[in-house]
Image (cartoon, rainbow, N blue to C red; front, side, top):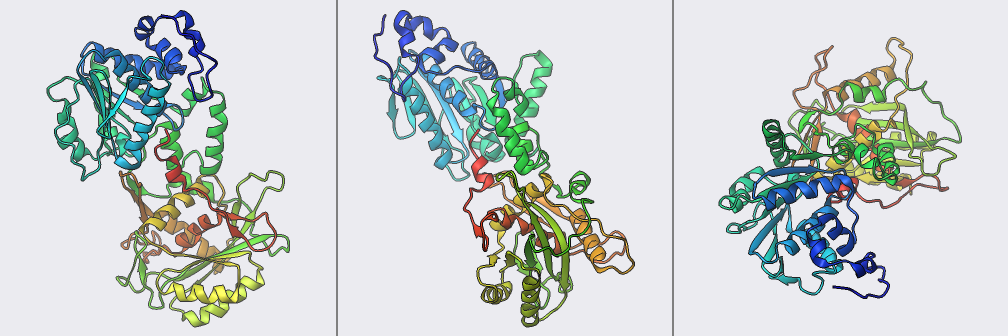
Length: 525
């Protein structure tokens, strides 16, 4: 069968002309050529390996379970769509059902459907015969694929996977939901399973299935785990190196998002937020700065209630321990690379102030005077609860220079992730103070280090990846036995707000809207 086709438009199959001398039946038996000539995709070797393994298990009815972990933006979603189109085409003469579940219907399942449609439209063999049914199913004659949501409240019981059961972003799917509603879909069919995703914590569904697949590999030697890192992708895609290097420069190699999204490394779901290797990135960088007319300065203000309330790990305030917190103010110098306009700022703490039980009226004037004396470009002020009044006064006293920040579970989580990016990329640099007896700045810095060492975190396994963090109320200083606060840590973390500001322009800094790095990473793998 010859195909005579004009030069394809940009959105059409670029290999259409190569089909002039090829037969569809031949292409259907050669999945590599099928993808290239019918769907317009050249599979990379690491994609090809997954494709062949899954296909072999389905054709031989082996019922294997595979775990596929690709770095972000390395072609995982692309591979999924091409595999699905090929299977529906190959098995179109049979009554076969493929089920694919995603953590949510919108946007994740809908995104999977959109990708499937794009590939199906480009495929020259089925472009005119594939059909959409019922809003979430697609059919090529007898073969069908159905896209479902694995959200906690979704009603998906009763679907059957006779050929393939896929779980996309399996690290975000509840283990309980999978065991109760999804796993039974293949109970009587011996369908092949594929768990797609990226590393997260060791308590996710993906992590559990990874362990099971690794054990199965040891028993029979059949590869079931395809766990790639950025280094593997770089071997076949040179341009990928620049992309990864930019992410590492921004977030740091040890940042949880870089470790999981690009190097397929699991992170602990809870534990110390600032282990020794992270603290080492902070300490001992330079001598303290002095006021310089050409330097950029910012103030970071964490406000405690006048009766010293406590901010919990979720950002809320309580009065559980009245002696716990203090108002903490950190002055940082913002250093920019004069030659590289894309270089990220470095933050050097210059001086700290602390007030315990101080009246906010008196603090208003004191903090204003500090800001004026140091000619600060911006003051980031905690505007949660009673802090709102102090932030409002400072905004009037320092027009155009105050950025209020309100704590809640969502904003505190994002602040924590962003502050880790600053630390892990080596951009929070503590000075080395001379150890003088009774030196206030040395004492404040030591308190800061002690708080960092005691700071704990806990992350969720859901799509939001919320992080709760803070110093536990039971924490005590290792030397003095006194209760540990988290005011210095919170004050420092407010530097993450500065990341969205343009300090290269003259005048007051202004906020440049930037995408949430977690949201930007989510689902783009």
